[in-house]
Image 1 (cartoon, rainbow, N blue to C red):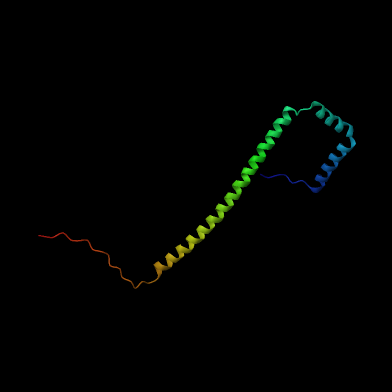
Image 2: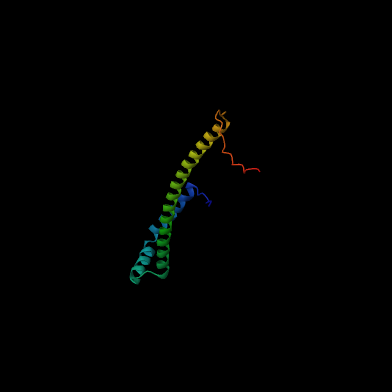
Length: 114
């Protein structure tokens, strides 16, 4: 997935705006947190988001484990391919090398004529 790159200037501007908002409007920030504390329990949205965060963390962990397994499998496959390439090269050399050995194949018994 491609993401648009932000210029460092844009990033600094965003952080400055955020800092300005949180520092200039402390009364609104404090009022917000007071209402949250007063309510005593999280909202449905917060509960849903927290569950989604837990699920995403589990998926990320599973993906991390799967990625580690795939990397190990890749290493094993690379070793097997290298071994098979070596064996293939050796067999091709044996086929092209002149052989002084003559092999006699067993003959099948002939039925009696008569």
